Every structure is written in C-alpha cells, then in structure tokens.
Length: 216
Length: 247
Image 1 (cartoon, helix red, strand yellow):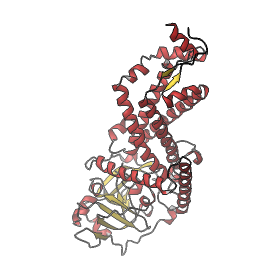
Image 2 (cartoon, rainbow over the protein chains, first blue to last red):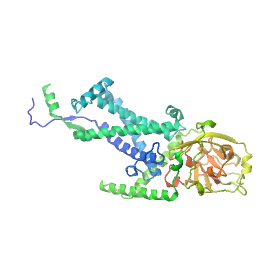
Image 3 (cartoon, one colour):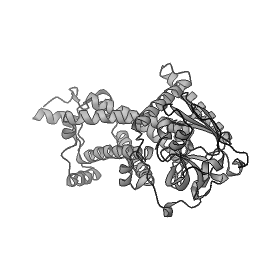
Image 4 (cartoon, rainbow over the protein chains, first blue to last red):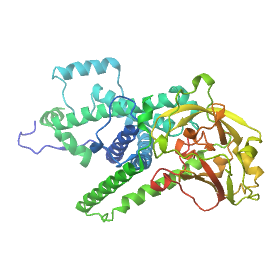
C-alpha cells in the first residue's frame, strides 16, 4: 500500500491526435453553429429566431462566408480523426463494447450516484454519448451538403425528403449537437479535473485508482 | 406564405448590417491583439473569408455536372403566390415598356445586333417546373418558359470558351455566371411565368432562369448581356455572397 502522502501518479489519458481533434472540432463547431444561427434567422423554419448577439457574421452574407469557410476546418479535422481512430484501434478500445443494456445499467447507476468515475475508461453512457454526437456531426455534414448542393446531390436529398427535408435534418442534427454540448460542459463544470487531460494528455490518478493499482 | 416577409432587406438595412459586420470584425481584431497576434488590420478576417469563398467557387465549378438536370416537378407542385424577391420592395420593381425594348449584346459575341421580344418569342420555346432556392434558405416551385440559353448563345455566335456571361438589369441589379452553367440545358432566358408573359413582379421583360443556382443568380429585368473573360462580379456578390452559388 502506498503511503497516503505519496504524490499521485500521472496517467496518460488522451492521445495527441484526440486532443488536437477535440479542440479544432470545438472551434469549428462553434463557428458553424453561431454562423448557422444567423443563416437560420434569414428564413426561420420555426416560429423563433436566435438573438443576433449570439450569432456570427453580422449579416446573412457574412454568416454564409464563415459557414462555408469553417466547414472545411470541421470536415478535414473529422476525416483525419476518423481515419486515425480506426487505423490505431482507438475507436475499438474506447467506444466498444457498448450495448443498450449497458447504457441503461450505467445510466441507472449514475442517476443513483453510484457510478464510479474512471479517468481512463469510458462508462457505457459516455460511450453512447460520444458515438451519438459523432453521428450527429456526420448527419449535420451530410444534410448540410445537401442543403448546399441540392441539385448535384439530389439522390442524397431524396433520402431526406428533398431540399426542404434536408433543411429540417440539418436543423435537428444541430440541435442534437447543442444538446450534447450543454451536457458535456455541465459535466466538465461538475468534474473540472477532466479538463486537464484534454489539454495536457495526462491526469493525476485519483486516490482510489492509485490505491487500487498498488493492490494488484 | 410567411416567406414573403423574409425577403431581401432594403438596401439601407443591408448597409446598416454591413456596418455592424465591420464593427464585429473590428472587435475580433481587438480580441486578436490581446492574444498577441498581428491581426489589428480589421480586413484580415475579411480577406481570409474572401479567399475561402474563391476556393469554394473553384470547388463548386469542379463538382458541377454540366449534364445533370435539376429535379423537375408537376403543375400541382407549383407554389401558389410565388414570392417576390429583390433588394427593394415589390412596388419599386422597374416597369419596362415593351415598345422600344431591345436586348443589347456586347463582349465576346459574333453577332451584336439587339433582340426585340418578338424576335426572342419566335425562337423555339421550352418550359420547366423547377425549384427556386433563395440564399436565405426558403424555396418555392415555379414554371418558367423561354429560350434555351445555350441555343441563344449559339445563335449570337458567343465565344463559349470564354469564362463568364454577365447581365445588366433595369433595376441596376447585375450578376454573372460561369460558362458551364450558361450552357446547362435547363438554363433558359425566361419570357413567361406560368404560361403568361413574365409579369413585372417576376422580371419583365426577361429573367435568366438557372435552376442549378441560388435565386440571386437568376437576374430579372435583363436589359443587356455580355460575354467576357474578366470577372464581372455582381450586386450581391460584390457585398460578400459567394459568386458561384451553385445548387
């Protein structure tokens, strides 16, 4: 058993490519969402507009410029992440196995406050949330491409109910991403120590983890 | 339909928005100063965004399939009360008299003689029911009829290896398109809307109907056109809308 006063060991949590992806994606997503809200305001799908103060671009033309510039950042960054993620086995190690049963089980434990936090492995709810938001981003990109190119991509448009359908899919994938961001930021506020490994790569082991590792 | 209230803002509104845009860009510059970046020139962000917009022009030209038609619809799909759109209210739409009107041609064309509406109506006519998609996001389905533009370019012996076709309009609007799109089979010089002479509201005496581009690339009240290799820009394009704006 390690003495209680011993400095807690560092553990490597997030690889460099994950950290680069995360922050570039955070920037790209912010630019896309804020400029997208301004574009939405030019012709709202629903009976509300986003306050101009939280949008980007200043007017429709400016917002479109931001949207069509930041989309390249978002897409290229995601492509690199997906290729490296599959090639290195990162996705398999981090995101699987995950089943509906395990998600429900971990969710129940979490709501009862009994789900132990682990720095290095994701619980089933985390896995589902990360897979889910990645799929939402892919859907936003695909539906956004259809809204951008409804003639060239008309075969894809048909799957979404045409141009107007693709606008709705694009809106709701944005909403899903926003819901994830709210949850994600709330959890970071509740457990701020998770921010360090996403910047530095490593984290200090928790006392429990340190003790557990020394018992083995 | 509620899209009518969402039409292009008046010019003064746009100018105010432009000024707010510049203000925001300035504050971005101020933010960059705090980080030590040399981004005090407010136009640096603008320049990057413009460069990306030009890159997007190239990408769109590359993925544009010159023989792929835009989806066509049936009479039943036509939007009732098709929205008016322009940078001014409908009441300010220019009224061009048919008497004395002639479409003027210039630039890289062999036959520069002007065309009356009668002469244009005597050419083979075709019609299409296609979706008009506005840069603002809304869309509406309409029916336009007129002269296939590639056929007209052939008749006037236009240099179709040139890069651009530009349009000058009675409302001081102007725009331009790439030659590939000009030669697309669905690009027409529209003289009718729903089988009636094109009303003032929709662009009398003629409108370029381009179902493979956003609405603002479909100039109305066309008075003159020209073929050129010098980038002609356009009313909205010069203010920041993407030039190619293909669909």
